[in-house]
Length: 345
Image 1 (cartoon, rainbow, N blue to C red):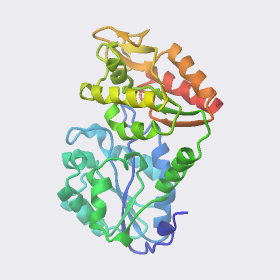
Image 2 (tube, rainbow, N blue to C red; image 1 turned 60 degrees about the vertical axis):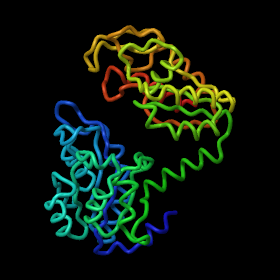
Image 3 (tube, rainbow, N blue to C red; image 1 turned 180 degrees about the vertical axis):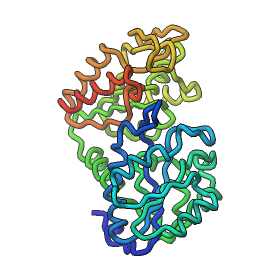
């Protein structure tokens, strides 16, 4: 139980919470299409509101290059309000401006302030200390409840805490739940232990992969990151996403897996598209033979069966990241089918 959080006196405190509201949006109307991450933060926010504290929410959305309207957090405001229908919620279109500081200073107990996307500033991902200090001025208590971004040394996650007294910084109820579940899996895993990793980039998962190689028996790689592994093995990947600068690291991962007797499974076929678009022309091709001008956006039917057979005989499963560009309807199948296999297991 997170006693530090639950026993803290939030009465009339301005509580700066780093949440992970990086949710998928409808490309035309910008409505939230999956509110799971927002819903998960309700217990933390509700506890502070009931304790008569005021809540200031910090989050990122997407990978914007500077101020990008389609990635504005104002789009998630209606969804957030639906979870707190009786709580006044204010939005400010910046996170370090005078307007943001003014809104925070005048925020009443039991009210919520949602600030604009922190990644509109390049200083966020740089872990800039001056940017973190400006963010810290918005509150007098800091709560990190963004498990999905806690591994990144960004200004609003790792750097900001130093500007709060030790007793005034803590993690929230969602973070506690995630860590408890992670420890349960990692410390008490029954073999065969299978990890399923997806998502866009190997660079986002390097530390996770290296740690898992000391614990798992099988490692399934899907999503965009799979193409860096396939490229490292000599495959032809067309225009698929690939981090060429990490090929040497991927080869080191293969070597460590071999030493640790961990079997790595890669896609054997994929759904290739002629452009990064839901309406693109598609074809199912061998994952090691993608023609130039085509890119892999989801795992294919043979891979789904291949991965599912491994998953369904596993006793412990850890899953992190989608198998394809699941935000697009035509490239959701791989992720959904793997989810069914996990449920079946």
